Length: 66
Image (tube, rainbow, N blue to C red):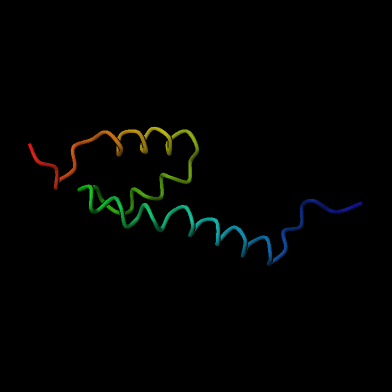
């Protein structure tokens, strides 16, 4: 049987890659929308990322014309 409590370095590397794939794009998008970049860390929490994504999609952006 495999010991499921052991996390290998490859698992940690994969977790960091997924973290970068999720957080970095939002870290760049949020300042363009007028929001602080560290808000991108909330995108790691599944219920919050959907709420924030919809708010971001339908809010008025700083470059929008009135």
